[in-house]
Image (tube, rainbow, N blue to C red; front, side, top):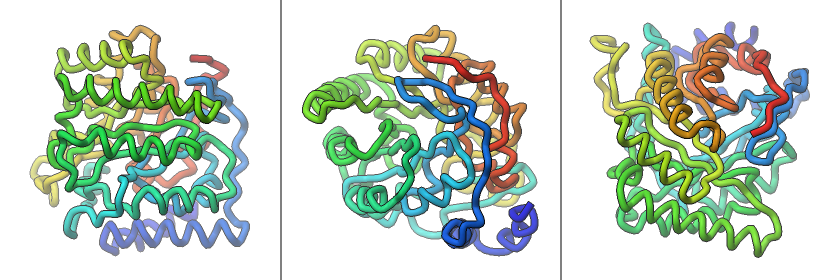
Length: 337
């Protein structure tokens, strides 16, 4: 209700400024004790973790983990923060975030702007949140793609003790050549190296933190087959399907529709859900799937589940609908994967 009143005002601001202001207001509201969603427990056990409900917040909204407690007050079953990189970086030049309200869409080319992994850890340590926290990791823009695995290793090692699960983001279209890590020897080397280090850390720290891969929707059938085979070979714990798309289907000829970057929101729903269904058919329940992309209603969340998702995540839809419509979703639960 409050968000629906505030949205017209927020939409008069530049998108990135509105994003920052919304998070700041959310944090203030939480501190005043005015942000308490009473969400019925709808537990789902997935990757050995019990999620209080199957609807989570996708990475990207809170890149540095600075708003964890406030976001938790919205009733999400889990929160994913990041994408984080080893060193702080400013990301791409402004403007880099564009609303397309006619299509309930967003185009972003943020470029992993963040304060670096060390600051994120300090923010996580300062948070009171005791729920399920995913941390999404990436590489710095100035790290050559041939050395990308080094950046992922740094982040994996640093966040291991602070995450419920760790997401390896190789699918953002806004870091040069990053998506090349989704194919061939590059993917094999990355997954093999990270899995080996994950198992070593599990032994050293005496607890196991699941490793999840996040992929793009812009994949051919042979790409899906290859990625699925790699996930099974290296026993990766989960797959997030999908990131933003490079397609402009659904925003053709609209203001900002031809801006460079990844498209999210309503236009990506069909493409990301088809990708999810394709992975589900190949993986046959052997690896948990988290469905994300274009969810603006409970019916669409259920469609993701029917396509094979064990959990769902939302982000861009929040911009247009606000949080309440998601945190009260009713999905079949009490499932274990």
